[in-house]
Length: 435
Image (cartoon, rainbow, N blue to C red):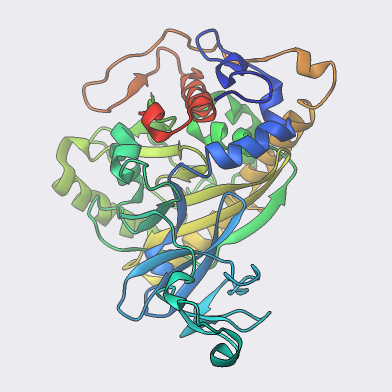
């Protein structure tokens, strides 16, 4: 399959590090992305802590599609298309809550939390012969996965399992989602999801968190102001960074802290610092030499990005057009953390990330200009430069993937891996071809 401008591979020359600006602004390419990528890839939907009880729901998105993440009466988790089978009206118009049934406000068709159609106006009189309600339930995703509390789904029944989709990136995402002590202890959403709209292409956001280390020059003013969680107003140091790119288009930046190092975190709050020191000691006991491997930031292809530990947040870049993205920030904390720790982290998180966060504001300004700069008649004739670190990196004894260390700290290998996978999705007619 080819794009309206030829093969996607011709637009994304990752071997030579040159990428066409068209992929950030072309409307026909964008429509194809919705089908080829968001219609087939595994997408992050929400977290199990958002729906702890039967009947709980959270309204999410998969690409441009509105979906409902819910837990039925038997406790099973589902993801449904938020669209009545009669005329398409949303059956759920609230962001989150609890219900016994989803009732369409247009013609009052009603559905149970397991998706069955149970109520139709004047059913006995109007429908002769009666139609089978069992065939007209809510549209459910083809596959669903729960990975360390995060809920993922795909519309494609032929997609591989979620862990196969992650491949070697499983190591990093699992590390980013675990409790601070390295265990599978429960984490929970801290507050509500923050949502806002930015005038830029979703891929700029994905590549930024996949491992664009050179852009941190934009955040120098934030460090100078001192909004970090340390007693000096700075972020506490993690150690040497390693960047890992994966064939699935995922990219993760790891930081390595020597296990024997005194590791002080969140020193501006003694209670919080003591909590994390205790967690660090338990982490050392549990993980040993791997305790100091922290997945700091990353992107799981196509559009879920994360800060692994400081702050521990997830970011969704929902596409709304070639030059518009709806961003959602999820903030997480250990469920068993003291209330004072949760409050300190809540205040730090919103200073750092989200629409009011100073680093996110830096990033948004960059993404906005990059998107508008891709739209000019003359500008489109000139590709973008992704050549940093070409040919560098290789295997690492501990971290899986194609890893680059301090030999090339500004490598753009992770964004290149993301765009290579983007082109493969755009060109491949099916999952068989993608495999």
